[in-house]
Image (cartoon, rainbow, N blue to C red; front, side, top):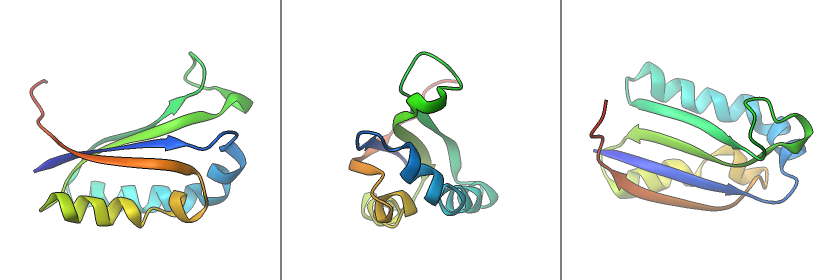
Length: 99
């Protein structure tokens, strides 16, 4: 089943994101290689694809996991959590309708 992992950043998270970004992306790349990643990306803090120093307010990952618990365990192991980027993470079942 698909799950949405919705993360909210702490204030001024950009320096923390930069420190852990390579490890964060490596985990996403692994999901992609397994054919389980539907989409992933950050929420810019301003209305721009390149928010610069404004940074980001959180992230969204939609991926396939065998269970809600497995999705939560994967989310809990994100390098951004260890780096203090995320203030909170919500994991929910997701049903893709379109496209």
